[in-house]
Image (cartoon, rainbow, N blue to C red; front, side):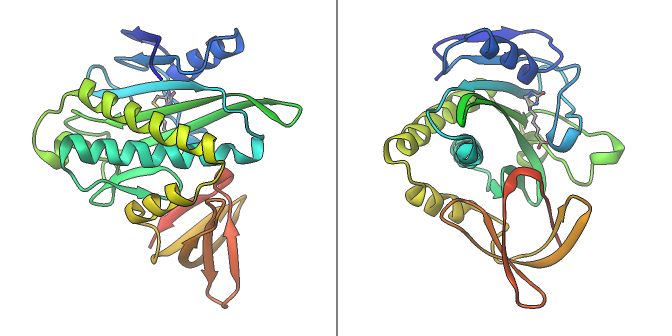
Length: 246
Ligand code: BTN
């Protein structure tokens, strides 16, 4: 990964750009990175604040030979790679909030937006968009209670390049391990160790429906296993849910 890197000073969204490249045949492993995004995109149609020179705003093009149904697993792998990369470089106790937010002291420092194109039950490409708040000093009023940066938490500046490198090394390692074995067992074992959601009360919001339960486990497929208040056990798929800690 990262054989070819497009480094922009400013761009609307690295995901959007990476999609364009992928649709035009760009190879697996190519990365689009920008110092600033003017229209950074988040999950569930949200925007992603991406100020200049203070964050890591990057997208990785992948072409895994898997079916679309397995694409969410790539997102889990990315969450694991990012979490461990951040821990290794900063020494800060980053954790994963299922499926793939990375948090520090319960506030979000990183989000991952996976976008996929598939044809005839085969993935054509996956864009893995990773946004990390590195040296950001402060956040807009509306997100300042839920978002933070490595700098705010660690009280110093961090080298963004070093973090990118650590993440790509991990991502390559875990991605290849998954493709070779086609099973998530070892990766999920690691993932669970970093996952802050397990054992917690959560509120799941899915298409206007809401329920409260306890996140008890991850399934073999990486879905969240939730025990509802009435004892019923359900597994939720990462695609369209929003999970809130209580
Ligand atoms: C989330 O909502 O948690 C996902 C945020 C993903 C942000 C990253 S920044 C790089 C890439 N380009 C985008 O427009 N979004 C992703």
